[in-house]
Image (cartoon, rainbow, N blue to C red; front, side, top):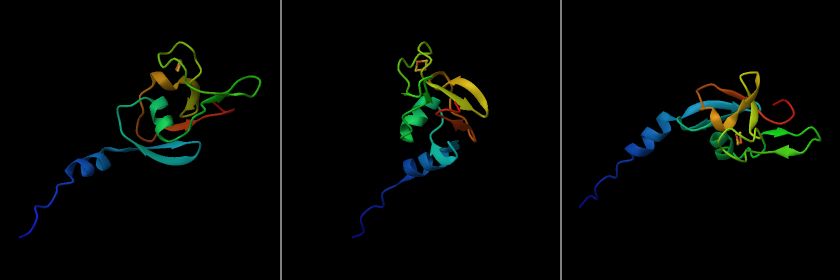
Length: 98
Ligand code: FES
């Protein structure tokens, strides 16, 4: 007797729903509906910018207050990663160029 075939429609849907972004020139795929900060974390990019003394900074408050999550998005500097929804073909720069 054949065993029933398991549906992987959830996997198909998840794969099809992903959007393409670029982080520091590297292509990534993430699910829509998340913040840029969440996308950075999922893609294991943990530092968003550098302080004036060159120290790595990362999202802290997650609610638009601390400004530590600033990145460049589509060549616009000082965008808050925690307050910005990810979008298809978004080009994100972190580090000194953020
Ligand atoms: S994490 Fe604090 S402003 Fe974005």
